Length: 136
Image 1 (cartoon, one colour):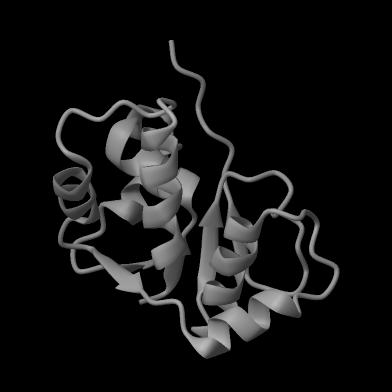
Image 2: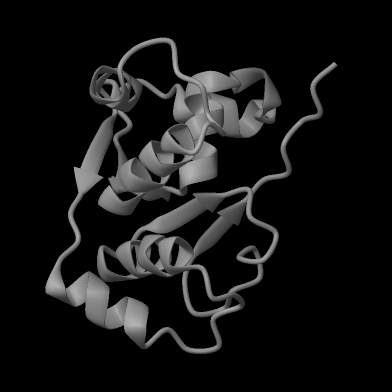
């Protein structure tokens, strides 16, 4: 495992792969490549769905299990992740989900794959930023 997907990258990969640049899409489709996913991403998707901002074609539990597929490994919220999230140096925003995703990447020594412009220049972690492709 080399990468942690942020919630947006995970959603794009599953729901809107056409918005992912070819290089990143090829990476996401690499046979045998496993991607980490912070447990907080499940909660973020669930909350968006609960608030009516993310309609899903099947019950939430089933959708989450299906969207993880065979190449996504769920990374838990551990004491180490929470402690790191509470102590991130110079973090660019106050989004608790972003803090936990970033801390998950740091604790597991993985590169964060993200579309979040606020995180792309964060110098205290390895970041692979990509600009989404506009839908036609």
